Image (tube, rainbow, N blue to C red):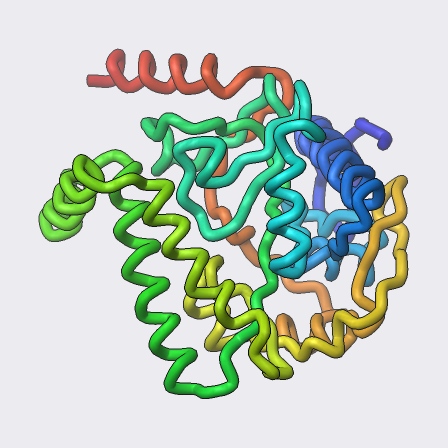
Length: 296
């Protein structure tokens, strides 16, 4: 893609942002190549789907790429990832890294994408694209609530166990100490597997709804997609590549955003994130630690 800065929708896209976008497009292209090779279903999702429909590319103020896959296709992707994603690509999930989000990320080594709250967390923090899992949701609302509660407990347990202790919030710090102590005697990966097994059991449920319960509890409450909306796939231009999207993207985007064709300049879901397309995250972390030592 053109790496020169430019204005889109009266918003300045810097040359540095263009470099990040370019790497994310390489990641997306590699993922599409692997999925096509193994006949796996994958679609642009969230802001990337909206960008494809409304901008034919990135939303000017967005900083990442989101895709979604059905559970069965995602499980196959996990199995083939170690052989299909070689340097500079790295497929990241709880089974490949000390990483506990409810979705996977495909990363590009030699770059930086760090959330400030994760500076001390020992996992790969290169530029990434998000790979979300579409799970069948139980028909029974009481069962949905049960799964949501269990999901939130396990998510907090695993996340607080790996992020640095927040000494500015006493109650949270105590909770984090408990979580870290728990994993002195329990395997993080086995706990994550328990996390996933809750959703395996739902896949054969004759429910018409799917969602991303492992990503966010509020995601279940706000966004329940009909399975039929993903029954057919078309392609749309996205920057200088063609990407797969659900044919019923209008229904999906309406569920997500309401009047999705009216641009609204909103912060990204990641909040503040340290991005650098030219520097490995290990170097960036060292610089940040040295800066903190100097300031103190």
